Length: 525
Image 1 (cartoon, rainbow, N blue to C red):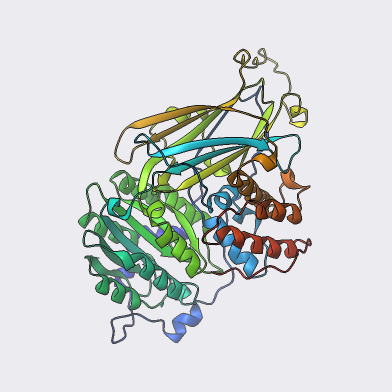
Image 2: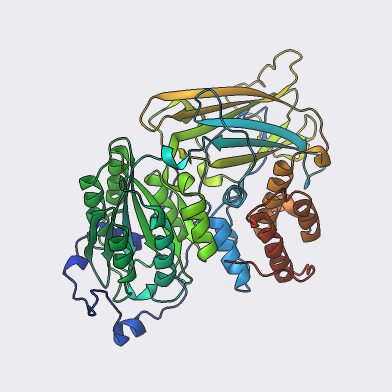
């Protein structure tokens, strides 16, 4: 998952020795707690930070007929947006990553066949926010695994127990979340725990003893100032000692993002995570709490570690990420998954990728297997949307001035009388194997929006919601009433109520943006 990211220096403490030598306060159960002075010292102003997102613009097919990007399986943006809205605030525009909002939801794409790690489905219909455009959906479904098929798991929790983690939506929620994850631990699995800050070092050596794991989790208390010290190195060392060949080897970092000090370089941290990733130990990140979220840092850490980044705003989200979707969260079935689309200039004048701004790749990176990209987990669904304009409708898309020293590049010659709208290629690697590639043409049958699948219509509604929250120039005419109407007609079975939950969020956002709808229902967390 290769993207330009500036790593906040505050996260770099994770490489530097410190907390193993810090004094701590232990109670009779062996837990750790914050002294009143330490707790008071933790009171701090809001320091949340988000990387800037420059929304994708339309591109002329005559200028650039290819679109290349890495898939994204993170879902943190949606649950973080939900936290803002339920707290009575609009999220910052840069906290809204449209692709993560779309991919928060599961779609009914077909199971892969013929031994493939995933299936690919495409669909085309009218675009609900642009009556001149067509909307193309590319849907990927990872192979599902039965519980007996899940490989042995070697999990190491790297937990922030600093004083800033003491509020109910941080360490207490983290403890309850981890208890859910370890409830189905098997004899072939192991869990180890490393903490940093008020308590430092290895709290639990790798074990399959559920009682020991739960006791160690229950004994954690927040206290002290954040200083990651050798935390991440200790976690990786623990994972190496319990390494499962052919199994799941993963460090799970859980924090509010409040890394206060750091003296190491961002390059050193990235290289460490990449080295461990290449050795077979992946890194996932769980964000908690309010006021300290270092979103871009946590996202970058997970990306470099071939892992997922999720934001846990309540027990419902913890259950979704760590129990219901444990396979997608922990079991990688294909890595470095890239998509490249070639547009037919006879059918498409201009196109725009919806979201994925920080996943865009150079076209030549598609065939370069050394370039990192996104991973797909077992049972995971991934969705990408393109807004495409027919030839002649791209007149408003800015072009370039005539060249002075050379002839302008001729438009690519289209295949004669081709009915194809575009051609989709996917490149990926098996978790421990060589690269493979899938290709498929995409035609446009001319369907109206109401003839499209529930999945396309709901994904379009989520995209409109995200664009509306970002005040996108591409959604200036979109209303919350329009979004809700589209979403209500595409709820499907929605067994766990996640799609209905978005209806309530639409009501909250509409009120904040001056378009009040009927009173929303309370969203369960």
